[in-house]
Amino acid sequence: MSDAPTMYCIEPLQVYLDDAAANKPAPGGGSVSACAGALGAALVSMVCNLTRGREKFAGVEAQMITLVAASEAARGRLEQLLQEDTTAYNGVIAAYKMPKETAEEQAARSQAIQDGLIIAADVPLEICGVAVEVCRLSKVAAGLGNPQAVTDAGIGAILGEAAVVGAALNVRINLGSIKDQAYVQSAAARIDEIQAEAAALRAEVLAITLSKL
Image 1 (cartoon, rainbow, N blue to C red):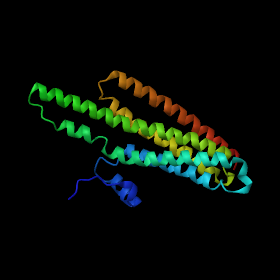
Image 2 (cartoon, one colour):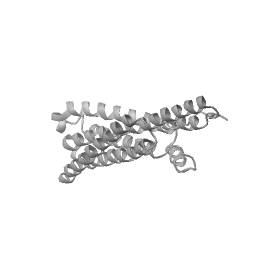
Image 3 (tube, rainbow, N blue to C red):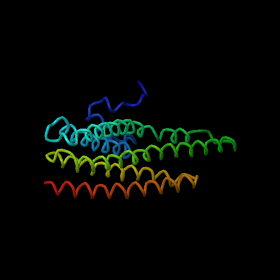
Image 4 (cartoon, rainbow, N blue to C red):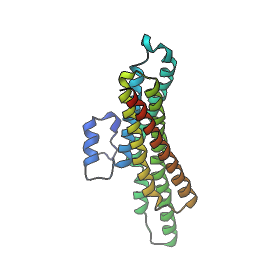
């Protein structure tokens, strides 16, 4: 039986949902947050694709081409992070299984745990960074895109913020065990900043969306 990880981006959605519901640690909240962000990015792309190429929206054609390239790049990276988060904690698990009989073994084990925790925090931290970009792109889509699809832009921002908030929780749970205080302080400040921006963008996008209904 193979121990290779399931490649969720090429499996049916049902496989991912079933695995998320199963009695195993991954895919967990970080991966699901990335999935939410990827869906938000997909909706931004949808708004672009329902706008570009239409004569009545010719004035924003160039912006839509640029926007869809950015939203597809965000979606692609979040799809990768969805997968990466399922294995990010493996290094910590492996480190805890290292021998600890001698002082040297204990030191090596402790360092490996710390290294693994930072990797496990870095992945959801990146999810936060890409997901807030989805919120930024949603604002452009809501403002310039086909008004018939404005609710999709609004939902894109909601999903982008949800991805930020969810991934930030996964960063924070790892920060509690990391001894490198410079890293802890930097990461905590970064997710606070990203969450504040995402919340503000979501509110702005929803205001734009509601004004066009």
